Length: 613
Image 1: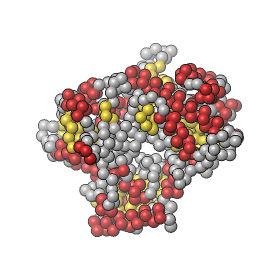
Image 2: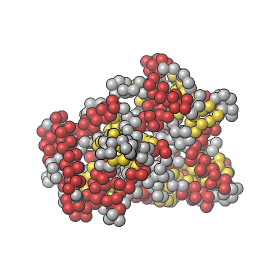
Image 3: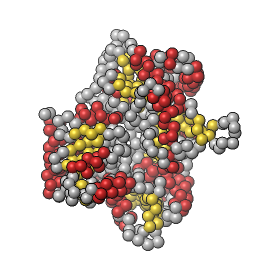
């Protein structure tokens, strides 16, 4: 057993000792924080600290005799490797929303036993489902303790990085306009107060940004709004020297809009102070059980979607214009990088050995040179051959591949710009590409094109169009285990709701509306061999129809992403004439928008890769 797995075994052993003292039969450790963020500050990475699994989504359960990590197909190979020797079993689940961990606990915890979870990081909706199942099995749910505190002596503190304004021209809507939108929705619900914990909602409402969470330009905070004012709860001190997280100028600007800045720890007390005559609007999927339990006893609570969730998903025309500009800058960076990459991988290797780590470093550096670039929107995935078959693979100095020989190189990457957030996946040939690889690539491309060309009635529930991208794969008995598309923020989180093009059960709030930006990213993965995923971001725009308004308003997708799709990987015989025409038209657009900003090798590369098929 190596030192790494020995450390995780020791932590699990320590945790079991604490659980035994507390009379707890099993501890549930979700991948969550008090803000239900996707990417977690280090303080709340307890699941990773205990198990050693570094994937972004999974659920850990530690019982007195067994422990299990529940992960979906995106992480199976990674989890299998990282859990080796830890004493933690991998349980493969169909999707991140599956409740297999509850079944596992019900089977192993005796009637009369106790399951514990930190209520401060357990979503209210998830808590309701968990409590119902456990109570039916005669098991008590305890949510008032965080046993990790007892065994994690150097647990990180709250992030302390400063907050800054997202200002005009890149923020076309003022804070006052956004507050008015939220208060209008509050009034429609009869709410006197609204409490928001999700950090992207708070960043959007306040027109503030930060860097507390990796890859997302957000900051850790809670926000309480009333009919005319508000309170922003943040960790005030940022370290020695008397610096504060929110400077004097921004505090004054917030005060002008009626928002008071208060210490982060005072948020629970603000909820407890609500009482008779108050009506609080909260989103049960975006607030934790711990905060819901702090609401004053006399206060009426209305549970509904956060008003900002839909509002921020619908980008204005001005925001869409900034996104298009960000896509050009992102496309220029990729052209410069891919021109370098092709030269570096040419026979003779003029730039020496190229690895997956090299790809990450060089592509990130190319983006960093572009105007308006702030940071990456997620950790770059550069997977060669078998590594590309793991949808959420990430190369590390300890484990990565050299790009050599024959095969497919999958690169999924993105950037945060002041004027937008990007996310793109492309697959590139290295050496000789086999007929089987070309077939897989072309089938995935057909799915990307099929959905990209789709028109649909406004208000269509986004999961209903998922099958369009899968149909070319289904026709061949093939499929992929992740969603087809996720919403994308405006210089915010790269994963944003409420829309989700996936096999999720459709819900009313998932309706497709004008201005939404969504990814289209079907894939196909051959474990141990190669993976294919082709991803563009698209914008919902009005679509003209021959019947006019007879059947209501229709929407279409405007493809925003600007980067060639490598035609050397295509099996031409599998494409129809209309598909070839779409691809040629897309490449003509890419060439038209990027060529004016390129010279030399990058321009030559663009022209070669966008030549008509």
